[in-house]
Length: 310
Image 1 (tube, rainbow, N blue to C red):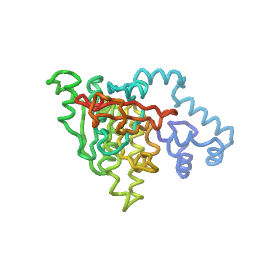
Image 2 (tube, one colour):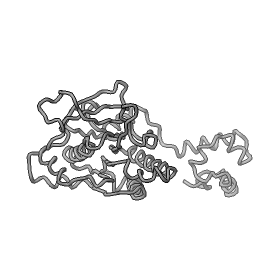
Image 3 (cartoon, rainbow, N blue to C red):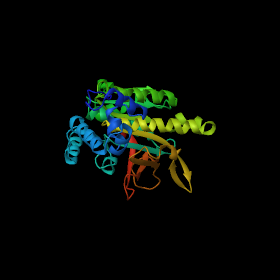
Image 4 (tube, rainbow, N blue to C red):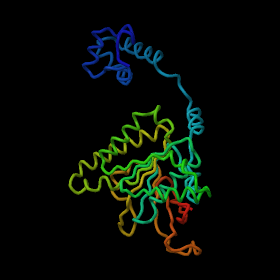
């Protein structure tokens, strides 16, 4: 809200012009400054400045809400997306809206399979909600998603359930940033039903920038991080995929510093070499570890079959 006499009679045109010289042009700008600064800028007494700020707060500030009310409202609107595997227990029920998850691991470990499973699960459990699947490697297979859907429903004719999954084939950082910016600007009208964004993956779009334009890579990563966090705060679940690298025999996310502040929960996917799944072929065995978001780093085993992560 721009400052004017309508905001408060004490804000004469001359005073509004004076405030503008100090980059104070809106009500939010004014209220974010201490009363001492306002008094000095407008050449009024401290008491007058306090009365001005107090009156503006009373007239324009929203009614205070207790934290317990905010929590209850969030619980009512929270959407939990289950995979139908032991991973749900590991994540205290499943993938939740309002949180950012990062999955990383070696090539071929099944990261994209997990993403497709989550997308199909969201369509099955929350049919009125929509999914945005951003594919940066051209790995998304419509046939595979249909196979997961049919295996989970037992019906070959549920194609309409996949209509809530919107796919974007985006291969450079500029198109990703533009798409996410459009999502942010579309709330709460066009995107009010959006509950899940999958970004598969984070590494590919910035990989070519790292060697030659590291500053551009950091800039793009920062913009993508900020946009994803803005969308997440609007009640959307964000699932991102990262590649991995080995350091001292430990699997770490590639470009970890670029995305360090993004995820609330970081999951490491790896192959299982033990006999924990003796009844399944070796190439189906997987394990996943919570490396961020839990103090004890819990682990669960699962397999990948016709129904996805199972």
